[in-house]
Image 1 (cartoon, one colour):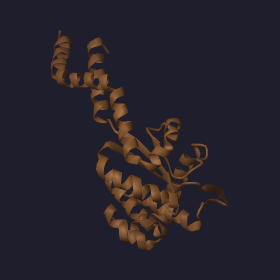
Image 2: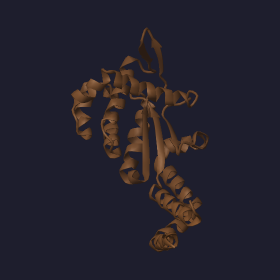
Image 3: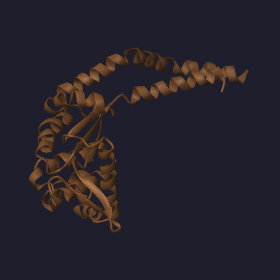
Image 4: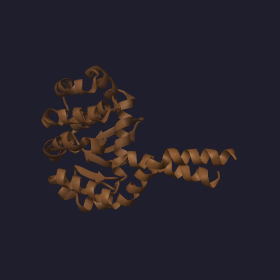
Length: 232
């Protein structure tokens, strides 16, 4: 690839980065946990309605659980008992039903709004309309290898963080160390902490964003220049 082609490629990559300037928020939680309920219903869910378009949310319904492969099957042990394991699997299967982030969040928030019933078919029936599917479809998943594998995957992801000391744990942009440093602020003042993080990130990348916007403006001219250059 010559210099001109490489230059245009860099510009195109800059445009892509500019278009995806969102904060990734990973939420490690469990469905029958009072602290998970408190954070999700009092902090995250109300804030998501305000600034959800600025967030790329990754839900991980597993918590302080374990899983072991015994006698050719996966055995789960959850902090709040077997019902929680099943409730976590309902969440895993539910959010796997759709691609749209808003639908996943609306379903999760609806379920967790009554966390004492979060592991029941009653609450599933009440909330499943957010997924534009049926309770039967979600329950078919929970009773199959798909549901089990989804929960194992979430468990492996959670355990890879070296056994989180508190649930829920919220991680910004996959930066565990930095997120743990501000974890109390995230849990108790999610809106202000998130907005500050977004603003700080924006300021840090400000010069890059300015150059990217300039690149967008000049892109047609640069493409024409490159085409003419290559034709000679």
